[in-house]
Image 1 (tube, rainbow, N blue to C red):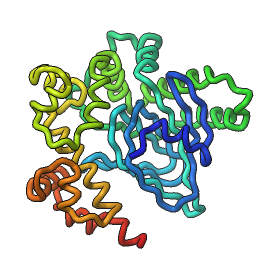
Image 2: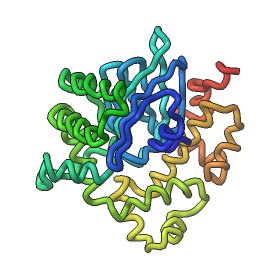
Image 3: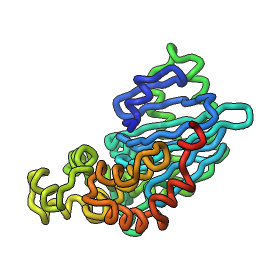
Image 4: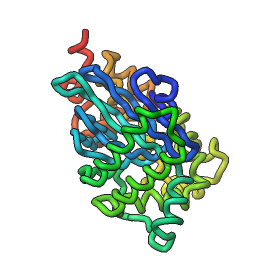
Length: 297
């Protein structure tokens, strides 16, 4: 599993980047016809596709972005990422990762905390939008930075990122952006919860045991979990496990029961039931429809 954005800065052979403590800008491209990865977002992501196609999958929800489209994706999301190139054999995108601190400063300077509200009905991992002419003009200006990398002050990255977020806020994604900022404002205590759950979600523990290992009471654990994720711990754990299973089903030929046991289920029958609830098909049907293993061996 790739932990983003750290992955990009340890593999700089196919992209250029700027790095700042609060925001990171990456010009990402590759000439591989098809590439699939498991991704854990460690910061909020503003993704803008310039060439090719990017498919994001979380559980049973999928989002396909083509050239000229973009998405705002929240920190802590576990995503199956599939990128395919154009007929010319190229995929290219701009990725901007921003921290909670950046969003807090953005709210203080441009939004106002009184306007930052949680969106109870919005539990989606992402928000999709079409790139506007203003966004395209900003991105064209950013591309000059890549050509003059050694002459650019990284502080300019913050200004350009702010410019893009202002354009997002005034376009189709204002409500979702406010939702992310709300979590940045209220999620300081919960920041330790996400790495804890990512490290331990495959453990065959009850919810009570998760609370005990997290060193809090069951009621506090459930409350903080709901604040951080918007769903119950049990639902999240089951969803996270079957998301990991879906990647294995798609990219390996491991026996289904072995996958079920490896991700924390006690038996294959329970795994199949939970998987079907999330994906509306059985694990075997999912493998038959999505496996890339057979096509690459």
